[in-house]
Length: 137
Image 1 (cartoon, rainbow, N blue to C red):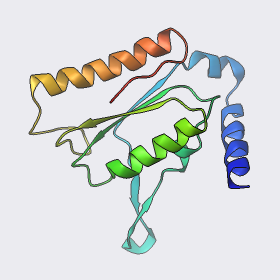
Image 2 (cartoon, rainbow, N blue to C red; image 1 turned 45 degrees about the vertical axis):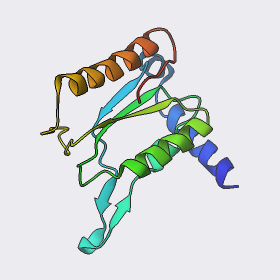
Image 3 (tube, helix red, strand yellow; image 1 turned 90 degrees about the horizontal axis):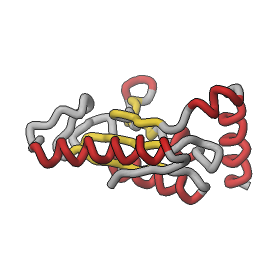
């Protein structure tokens, strides 16, 4: 029942865009995803992974670029949400910027790590150019 509800929500979200707009979006690169949000009243963080988990076969490919030092992003939760989307037929890849904060700035950045990020984005874009590709690590 939960899977059927998720399927219906994903289809409804995909159908909210006019067909010509859906066709024009060949992929999405999300540079930093604020997965965690402070609950009302300043309590514990709540995980906002429903938009990722709801992705399915009608959704464009998605590359999530996240910093592992971002206090608003739990890398394990991002990976779990992306795996759930992939299981539903979505194309989601995750690229982690080692030492990256919420702005993806990293004191640990090296030319090799910056090149790896460039390659992840380029692979996602190339995949989107030929249809419904993906990329990432």
